[in-house]
Length: 327
Image (cartoon, rainbow, N blue to C red):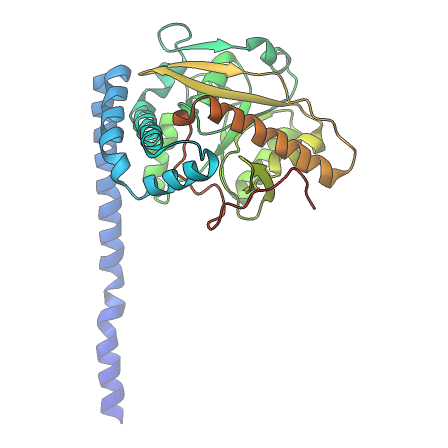
C-alpha cells in the first residue's frame, strides 16, 4: 500500500514541475507576438498611410471572403436585405473585408490621419452640431462600425472635444498595450478610453459626473440587452446609451466616418435625435433605442458595404419579423 501511494505521488510529480515550463512557453509566445506586431507596425509606418491602406484592402478582399465570418455576413444580408441576389451579396462582403483590411493597416497612422484636417485626410460635415459641445456642454455621441470607426475619438480630440469612449481589451496585456498606444493621439487632452466591463462602466459614469462627454459604438449584439427592431427583426440592443441620456438629460448626437478613399474620410455629424418622451422610463428607453437603431439602419441602407456585417447581430434561426411595439 505504501509503495503504491508513493508510486502515485511519483507519477504526479512531473505534472507539477511542468507548470513552470508552460508559463515560460506562454511568456515566450506573448513576447514573440509582440515583437512581430511591432515589426508589422514599423513596416506599415514606412509604407505611409495610403500604401498601407491599399495593402490592407488587397489582403482583406482576397482572404476575407474565404473565412467563416463571411458566411455569417451572407446570412445577415439574406435576412436584412432579402432583395439582394447572390452576386450583390458577394460584392458587399468583399467591400466589407476591403474596408476592414484598410482599417487594420491604417491603425499605425491614426495620429497622423486625425491631425490632418482637409483634403489630405479628412473633411467634416455638420460641424455646427458640435457647437454646444465645443462650448463646454455635455453630449452623448453614437456611431457604429462604419468606414474607419477607429478615427472617431482621435478626430474628436483634434477638434478639441472632451469625448471619451470604450474599447474591447485584447486578451494579451502586451498586445493590448501596443494597440492602445496606437489609439492615443497627441494633444488628446481629456479624451480617454475605458475598457468594456464593470470597471470601465464605473469609470465612464465618473467621467460623465465630472462633466465629460461620451461616445459609443452601438451596433453590436448584447445578449443581456433589450430586443429592439433592427431591419424589421428583434435585435438584442444595449440600452446603456438611452439610459444615460435620460439620467443626465443629454442629447444623442449621431456621428460616423465615411471612407472616401485610401486614408481619406468624411466625418459626418448629424443633428441630435428628436424623440418624443413620455416620462415613463421603460417606454422612453425603448423609444430612444429604437431611434438609434433606425439611424444606424438608414446609414447601412445608404452604403451596405461600409458596415461590418461579419458579427451575429440577430438571433440565429428563422428570421422572425417584428413590429414597433414592445412589452
